[in-house]
Image (cartoon, rainbow, N blue to C red):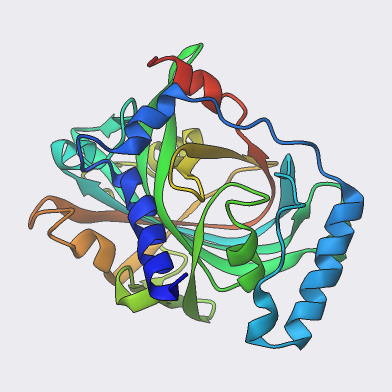
Length: 316
């Protein structure tokens, strides 16, 4: 198959999650049940790691590894070395049009809260595997706070429009042995005791992000979050994240569980996020920068959300 055509088809499928077409298949995807994946087979994981290491020695051509023998992992664990949340307040009606039903905007003080999560993960590996075998990566997610239906009623979460990573292994396995499809990006990070600067260069420059900020500053009240506690609790409640599956036909979810929770203000001096500057998604004036937070040194786990089929069945 023509490589360009294949890439265009994949891009088209993934864009369905934005829900900007009335006949969007992802809307109907809530009427289907997700696959119940088999538990991790340690022998197959060992085989994969061996094949992956061998592929690295063969150069770029060797990265196409057979993945069909891999099962979805039930849980991952690692360390959040650094997590930055760049938060924007947006027009709720504009954002709602970008969500597939039955997801609803989580309105907060009259706004939809969208943003970028920039997270450095270290020692990430299947739960129970020694930390020395884990991988480290810089990652980015464009996301929005939502409410989604469960058997116990609506609860808060986030919808992730797109993800980026600098780690080829994460890009390769995302959507295959853990939920979440990733694109490759270059991350440039500069940090000392007082300042932090990041620049993320994405494929075709379509979702580039850059910012500079001061560390160790007091909280500056914003239109959405008058106190640091208010901001901390809002984002703590959004621990369940949903995104488009690798085939673009349904949603998958993961829950982030941390052993502790602490956030600090980040005093942003300059920032640019091209995704939210795209007038096709966000008309001029419909989104504004609000605030930023930083977290460090948090042991955590990622768990596949198993009630996604129940979420789908609510709207049969």
